[in-house]
Length: 456
Image 1: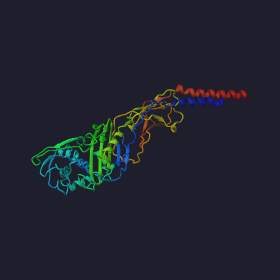
Image 2 (image 1 turned 180 degrees about the horizontal axis):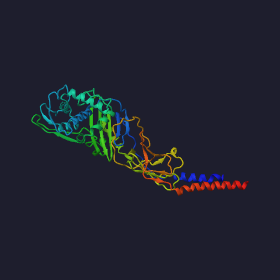
Image 3 (image 1 turned 45 degrees about the vertical axis):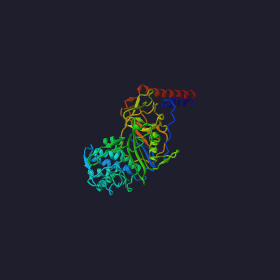
Image 4 (image 1 turned 135 degrees about the horizontal axis):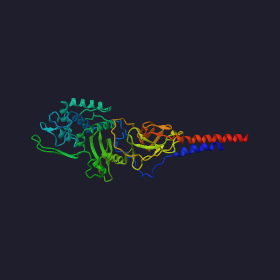
């Protein structure tokens, strides 16, 4: 029995050093995931972490209605990025053939307008005739512009989208929540688009053809609740667009964007119905669902590490001191709900002799990195976020930049992100320290030989 004491003691000491120490504190209970009942289709997405937080029938097609105008605006911006041009309203652009519904105050044939004014009228109050006028400005004819719309959709990877007009009145237009998200993210890269869609009001000045000004306000009641509490998030200043849409077959649609700290959230809800209230009044379901999604989104924050940031400190083999700082090779972030940041753990399956202790801390926020367009997994199920390190077998000497393991973050939405762990400095176990186990082993051998000789 005694012959096993020294090796066992050595292993216990090394294993004990490997137990990580973490910050104390009980997290507060985070808000519950919303239940979207008014909209048949919905999604919620955060851009800087490339995370889908919520999906409901995201690949079902629906008529986008006036959300079509986002594609119209994109093609105008690609043709005239600064919106410095001007054009004249043609009789064809406001004919029943191409624009069969207009408000009482509408554009008149023959009036000349700036492209800037037309784009504001297109996107803020959703002026249908602005779509046809802009289509002629860009392509020369409305049919040619529609061809450009569908070509651009294919180019962006909007695989289940079809356009039949530049304003969205046709029931033949089709889009999915996923495709609408792709389009919105692309459109929001244009500075002038962002500036226009976050505006709450504007006007088209009178001219020699139209003797009256057209004053208007946004159709996005989440961005401008106008006193309706059920549409009010409490942070409408962070809502920066994008576009509503309604025709009978489409129901109510809304693509929305919110910027909060270093996070950018997009929501898309489609085919929403109105909801009757206890007092007998009716409220629009697409505004209420969007409000619920955005309020839930505010409970999340980005957590992780920037490239080169120190994550932990470990030790080279048999070193009694933690002499090896570890950094991440690349930016690595996930979304977590506030007061619920995961602690870093050393995965048990990765522990192997020799290995020393880990010092882990809570994840920290860093500036966003905009990813390329991705396809969602569409299996979003809210779970617990986690963070763990998997270390390779660390030898007696490590050079700066050596890969010594992996950091793995899981966000609770089915996304697993990982990056290599790198040695941040040269580190080596002192040769003198290496004599300790050798000496212990030699002493054990001498002791065993002495006992055997005594017995003989």
